[in-house]
Length: 203
Image 1 (tube, rainbow, N blue to C red):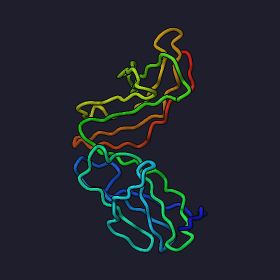
Image 2: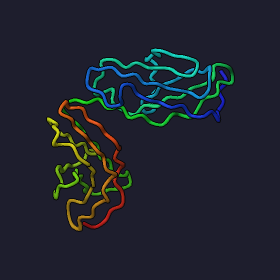
Image 3: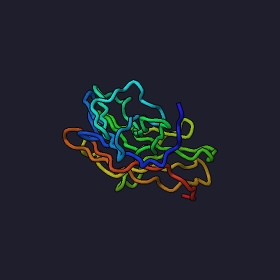
Image 4: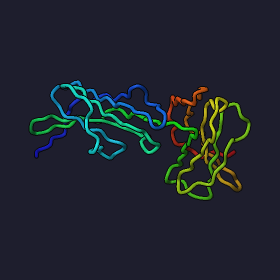
């Protein structure tokens, strides 16, 4: 086969009924292309979802059905398309769609840059709280903060920092904030993905 790098416009990827769905439910990922008569490919991260067949398709739209969702189905998805005739030009990938599968536990990940070394710890912050709500010694360059038995009271704006555990106690700027809404039905809506904190400053 002969492949060529495209200047094909990127497709769009959306989720129905929502990109935030409960455990053991179903979700449809819809990939739409401005170009007709193309084939589509879905990826989770950088891994092609070859085993996932299209559920429904037209000339410029395809739907991928994910059933009985588990926590492992959560992640970042993209789609792309390619022409059906040689030289099989491929499009740019779509914007990332973050699929979240909710349960009674929410895990927040905080990651520091790879070029930061030393005795570093992480702290999880919640807007309106005077002290960190969690502290954690990382595994590698990442820490995971789990919120157990989540309730409406956990709604809020979260961020994280990393810091030195001994003098001079330098700390990073806070990460971008992550908004979490929790309804009485335990449905969580994340409006912004927190970026990794950077730039060490003295506390």
